[in-house]
Length: 443
Image (cartoon, rainbow, N blue to C red):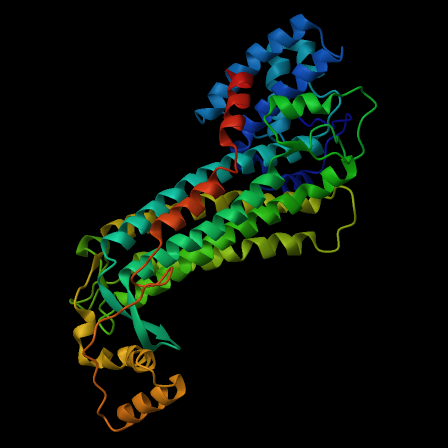
């Protein structure tokens, strides 16, 4: 069945090629397509395009379909083109001609726009909660190990003293900036395109404000041409936000690969979290970090892939956009898996104390000596030269203690300030409003 059927059969090869992966990928969209149909027909009844008894019958059936779709019990039949066709077919089979009325005032174009917005919105909320869990673990570890020093590096050369508190805390704060990106993506996804139809509106007296409220959207995509132009743009913006997360945890994974190696030896993974070699019996490999790194690099390419698919498309709808789903829908599970396994690895890693007692890290304290001399009144450049010459002569010694007090330094991590920053950002999403609207619609 095709919603655009006009009494002739499409060439089988053309049909297979044009349908592509829609049947498989649209299963992810099924609950959202049904939800959108509920809102749409509720609006249709309010403007006189459905009778009250027809709406009641349709809503009852759609709620049953929604419950099954949420459980994963929704299937798209082999000869059905997409989720939109499947839902309408199921309604028509069960309810007869009433089922044929649900498409009034909309197109598959704004249906898929709506489905992808609702799907993206739900996925963003899920990702945000997993980000927060990783953030909390990193903050806990930062406080737990704040007094254990490690060498800091520039150019992969020993530079200055750092600490596990700084290291864990750095990635926690990085996630707060990533959360800003996610909130921006949420704002773009949280606008209602329904009613744009094929991209040029409808002569039916639609109430788009009503469907916006029913679905818990924050606002409308008002201009119907722009609503259609948002196809792909929304996905690209969301993918860029996800790539920011991937960059953070991918970089953490690179550190994990380095720091677990014998040459660094800063952290250990429990042996149960490592893999071995088929010929080297001593090997305990940090494959978990290597695979996080690879997945995150892959995720970072998704936004650019979407951009390339859209390159040089004029306004209006084009079938090119269908291919975007093939890279967009899978990226959510991939980033969620990376977040979860990173959280697990951080929770279970062991840190090594006493690292800075090793003589090879002695020169990391040279700046501390320069600052000590400057604090005693020597001009900084003279202090720098004095310490530099002592290093050249092999006479440098540092027997003092670290005195770092400014915000964000070893001695003042500002963990609570970073937590408040994250809390403020998370408060901007308004998940509760969306959940209340959806519950009112589908329950």
